[in-house]
Length: 69
Image 1 (cartoon, rainbow, N blue to C red):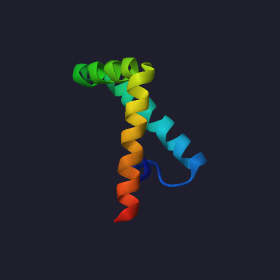
Image 2: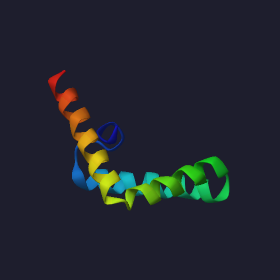
Image 3: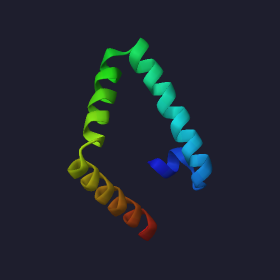
């Protein structure tokens, strides 16, 4: 999903991801309580190193599967 959203260029990816994150944060904080709750939970989970390792391992598996197809 990350590559679909952000493409292959690391510089463009960072800019797009930051822009998308900023837009979603604005919506979450101002308009959508459900999105705000999800973003807060994601922020908490992303600070957890165990969760982060599991997430990155799963992401690698998905990228590897995609490369084989």
